[in-house]
Amino acid sequence: MPYRVFPVLGIQHAGEVIEVIQANMAQYLKDCRVSCKLSWEDLQALCRRKRLVCKQLKVTKNNFNDYEVEYLCNYKKHKGREFFLVKWKGYAESENTWEPLKNLKCPILLHQFREDMKAALLQASEPLDSASLSAAIVSFLLQKAKQSNGRGWGVRTLQRIYKNSFVMEYLGEIITTEEAERRGVVYDKQGVTYLFDLDYVEDVYTIDAAHYGNISHFVNHSCDPNLQVYNVFIENLDERLPRIAFFAKQGIKAGEELTFDYKMNIDPVDAE
Image (cartoon, rainbow, N blue to C red; front, side):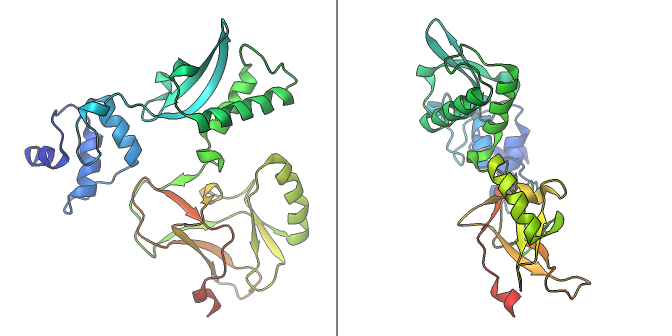
């Protein structure tokens, strides 16, 4: 079996990267049922790290050294030069490295990091030209950096999800709309909110997943989502209290982020 797999994958050196082999088998061999638990970018980084050529992943000898910055997590200034602690995509945090500004080609990440650092320094009443950062500020910046694209933590699936499959239910504390308005003011100041209005027929109740709930409250918004929201009634005839269910709008590959439209309309199936 291995001798047939390598040519299909385009791998020239066997090595010990079983994850790469399994992932490619799952994607390109129809008779294989091995789950792929890594994203496309993670697999590319893994191949480059192990110096493996893979045509399907577009990894060649010419781009072995193309490293991608996943996020920035610390800052210091030494002899007038700026250095950033870099988390490299596809590498463990234990392999983070300090890099001078000139080595970094990620203007968007740099801009966001500087904005977050400035806000943290101001809030902590520390000098904006600090040569190094306190542990509290580093912890704050690391938390912000780990959020995906500044949209929140996000959720990715570890296995393939078929179209129309039930994925999860949005769970939380059921509160009145009036209480939701009050909490919403507080959440807006914190820059986060987990409120989901139950407005199937009228706006009376809201789900607040800030303190009670499940992984669903980490699912991000998208204008082109892969999840559809449905109002579901189970052992309940009160139309003011539907249960919120997420179903797959399309086939979703392992490693893909799950998203839904925060401004969703009632699905025609619900209306019927």
